[in-house]
Image 1 (cartoon, rainbow, N blue to C red):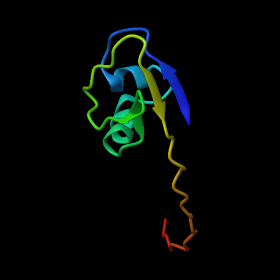
Image 2: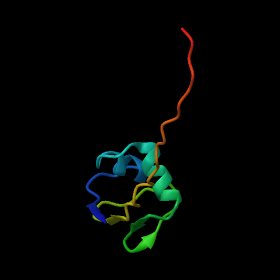
Image 3: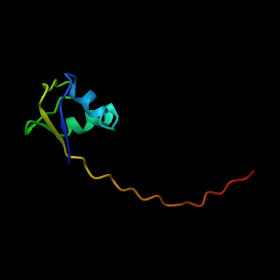
Image 4: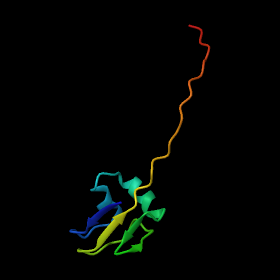
Length: 76
C-alpha cells in the first residue's frame, strides 16, 4: 500500500501519475476500486481531492504469465 498526501489541487489520476505510474494505469486502478481518499473508495479518475487529503493506493499484485517456446518451421 502506498500513501500520498495531497499538496496540489489536481485530478486524482494526474496526482498518482506523479507518483511513478502512468496516468492510464492510475485510471485503471482508480476505476477498479484500489484507491481511497480519506478512507473512502473513489472510482472516478477525474475526482479532485483537496489539499491535505490522504490518498491510499492498494497496488495489485502483477499478473504472472508463462511464456512457452514453440518450434515454428521457417524456410529462408
